[in-house]
Amino acid sequence: MTDAREQSAESGDGSRPGVGADPARNAEVAETPVEETVTRAIDEGRRRISRRTWPLLATGLLGGIDVGTGVLALLFVEHETHSKLLAGLAFSIGFIALTLARSELFTEDFLVPVVTVIARQARFRMLMRLWVGTLVANLVGGWLFTWLLMAGFPQFAETAVEAGSFYVDLGLGVKAFALAVIGGVVITLMTWMQHSTDSTGIRLVPAVTAGFLLAGAQLNHVVVNSLLMFTALHTGDAPFGYVQWAQTAGLAAAGNVVGGVVLVTLLRLFQSPHTIAEERANPALGVAVGDDRRED
Image 1: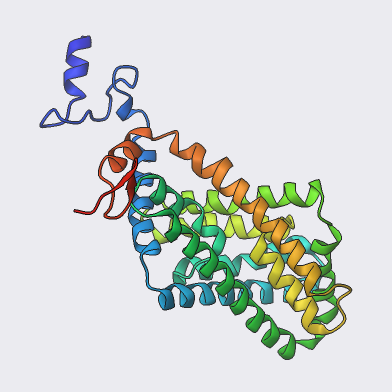
Image 2: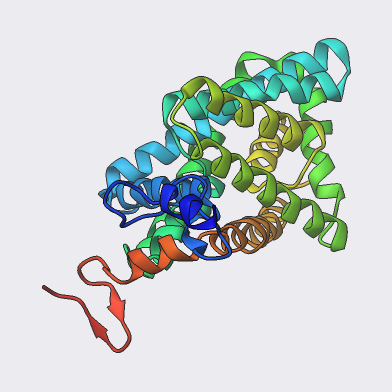
């Protein structure tokens, strides 16, 4: 019976075990869905990380604007209902826009390009270029959109000041950093779940849930809190300035990286060591292999 089961677990050519194979005998079949998700992430990472500068910046600008639509929804609902819970749910509109419009946030680039670099399909400096370019573009796009937002809806000024001041009032201590780490975990988990399926409809589920948690629970996310602080600053009545914004955003970015890269991305890769090993065995051109670079 055991031999028959093992034989039936083999694929047609016998090269790869199929459904029903014993993970204790062949670890490659232990996490097949995870391996497929990692492969999707690497393929997407190659595309993202190799873009030219202007498409990269344009995508980041649009990401800031798309999240800005979520900020509009948040301020509108909170102004009308005085409910942070409903306002957080309304904010998910911004993340739905991110998903359907194919724009991009700095924190969405934790899982996909980091996996690509670890798999030796891109260079580390390309990752740094992507992170810096996307973050700056997110903030510029968000600043411009929130200026338009407050110019068009001055009645939201009091709500905007309250929402933006929350993150400054957190200070630069353990609580603020912990909320930033959790924010990084939530957004990177969203990215992982979206890459686990090809269905656009299913991808909207993690977009809505992540957006709701980030805004409803007031997690410390560098782009979201920056846009809310920008709305407060645009009113002219904010009890803080751009120096305090920069300090708050810097701590949030550091915590987001820890949560997204360390607590989600790296741990997820340990679920699928075989896929990473296969990719690393065939590095992309120019990627370092030991003390050498592949040039042919």
